[in-house]
Length: 447
Image 1 (cartoon, rainbow, N blue to C red):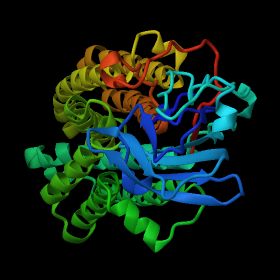
Image 2: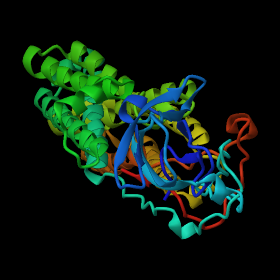
Image 3: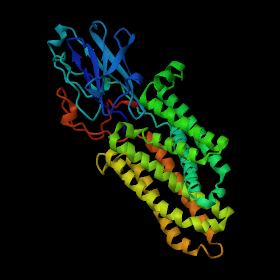
Image 4: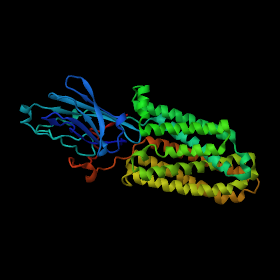
C-alpha cells in the first residue's frame, strides 16, 4: 500500500553495523514533516526505550533529525518513528541497526538494506566493514487501512456544506425570487455538514493519536501546528455559517462564511504537502465550483416542487452556471491529478489513481445528465409535467454528484504515489536505487 510521507532513506541505515555510535538519527521523507507531532524512539539493547528530541533539518523540511544524548554502548538498536506530514496524515515504522566493537568490525563489511523499497539509504560515516544481517531481521511494518469514518465524515460533511452554500448562492442572486429560498432545508443541510465536520475533527484527532487517547496536551500540540489550526478553522467556519443561517437569517453573511469554509478546506490535505502554490488554489476552485453545481441542482428540485413557473425561469440560469462550474471542476481536477500522480500508469497501479478514475467516471456520467437536461428537458419545460421530468432527472444527477463528493472524501485520506527521488533532492550523501518490483520489505506503516 502506498503511503503519505514515505521514508526514503535514513542515517544510520537499516540493518547497518557501525563502529562509532551515531550522534543523530536522520530520517528523510518524501513530504514535509510537522516536527511538533513527530517523534523518534530509540530502543536499546537492555530493553529500555528513549524518546529523542527531534526537529526538522533547517535546510530540508522533509528531514527529521533526532539528537542522541550520551554515548551508546555496543549492541542492537531499534528505531521507531512516528511522523505527521504536512497533509495532516500520520505514518510510522521501525528498523534496526547495530553498534559493534572495534575488534568485531575489523573482520566484516557493511551492506545496509534500505528502510524502504524506493531508495537506497544514506551510508553513515561511522559504518564499518561487516556482514549484513538477513532482511528478515528488519521489523515488519504493516500499513493500516485508511480511517473509514474520518473519510466518510469529511466527504459527507463537506458535501452537505457545499449543498447549502450553493443553494444560498442561487437564492441570494435570484432577485425577486429570493422569497422562495428554502430556509429550513438550507439550515438542515448546513447543520448536518457542520455536525459531520465536528465528528471528522474528533475522528482525525483520534487517527493522529494512534489509539493513545485525546488528551488536552495532545490537542494543544496539534492545534499548535498549521494543519491543526486549519482543521479547527474549517470546523469553526462551518458552525458560524450555521449560526448565520439559523439565528440571524443573514443569507449573504452565511454565504460568505460558507465560502470561506470551503476555501480553507482547499488548503487541507494533499495540496498542503504537494506543490501547494498550484494545488491549493486548484482545490479551492474545485470545491467552490462543486458547491455551485450541486447547489444549483438542489435549487431546481426545490423550485419544481413549490413554484413551477420559477423553476422554468431559473432552469436556464442554473444550466449555464453549472456548465461553467463543470469546466472549472474538470480543469482544477486535472491540474491536481497532474501534480499528485507521477505518471499516467499510476492511474491503474495505485489505489489513489483508481479512485481518481472512479471520480472521473462519475463526472462523465454527470456530463451525460447535463446534456440530457439542457438539450432535451429544458426545451420541454413549458409542456405539462416538464418541471417534474426535470426534477426527476436532477435528483438522479444529485445522487451521482453526492457519490463523487464522497469519493473525494476518501481521496483526501488515500495516499498519493510516492514521488521518485531525483539527484537534486536526494542530497550529496545518498544514492537513489531503483524500486524492486513487488518489494515491500521495510515499508513504513500508516497510523
